[in-house]
Image (spheres, helix red, strand yellow):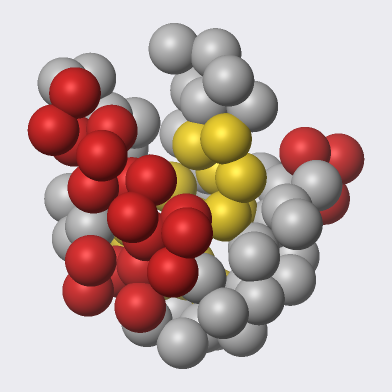
Length: 78
């Protein structure tokens, strides 16, 4: 389970975030490429754009639910 206190500072403000558990597997970037980006210097994903539309939220939720190490969180705000 992702922890808000451990989220990467690169994450855009908003409900979705990626924390330090990320293993850079690329799955979230494949499932929701408009919302997840890679920090090339340190090798992890982060939320580079927050979803606004319901379909986009669904895309991010799919990425969150598919994350093999549960590094993606949703703090419930919108």
